[in-house]
Length: 416
Image (cartoon, rainbow, N blue to C red):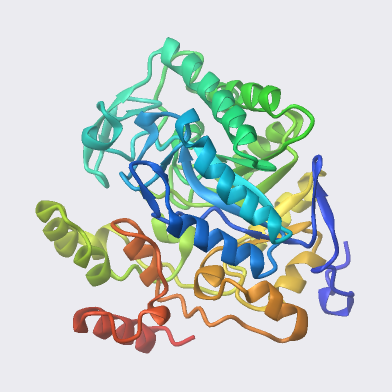
């Protein structure tokens, strides 16, 4: 592989395929949670946002995150994929297609990252335990529940087809349910679903069997997988490559290479500093608000941001795999995007860049050295857990003084 990426012509605006689906260029809006759902159903805000990203030139935009069952919801303003929301979702996919882009939806189950009030029951996971970051007690799944859950993934894909989606992205990373089975940190089972990595992959195989069957030959299947969990005792690169190869054998059309555990190492996923004042300002549960104020800095440590922060790890996967790979993590400028693509990745995903600037892709057509205006203060991330996502730069004059002060402080610590 030629590593002198600067000498190669850009492929950014050339068409490319993921399974049966061809995108007009190499860009994908990553499955970043929008928080734009009332009663677990899509809203006009969700429609407007994804239409704007499609109009902004993206190859494919991804709605996030849709739970395959009620008990897989981590927030009350998330999508729950079910027949009742197919029609309003079809309105969104029609608008995306009208702008020339493809439409994808991320499907998953949050496992232990929920509460009884949201999930409708005690949260479930690979094993029984306590999730400090929720905080909540968690019950290990019974074998019949595991089999039923795998079928739910297939049902969700069928609903996605009815809603007009071209692709689905199965969430098998970030400490969500499939990831909770894969990781030795959360999987302490002593049956055929625990112990060896081969056993820990069993639930993933069951889900993928149902997903591929439902996807048929006309839908693209993408899987988000962890290269490493981001902390001692979790999955590391060697196991991450084994999992990725298994997904390749199971028929996945492309992989999104990510890392981190939302309930253990959240900023390993997103990088930068979590603005605790912003996070707690929008919280409505008083005890959680004050608990995070007291312990938030300890629970959510800062991980420094740099452009393309997952690239070194992702290159190891590129060498080990043949299927199309989608790079995600810290892409905010055209030169870095071209560099990543010229290292052998077929597509790139962006999240925060497109929250800040939905038409960033169109602007890259005309400016070789363009950089989006995202400064990675992570206001959008801190806000989306309680209300809809938004970039602080779009809210000038609307933010309370305490949040303005926090953003200024983050800028001083880590100027972009």
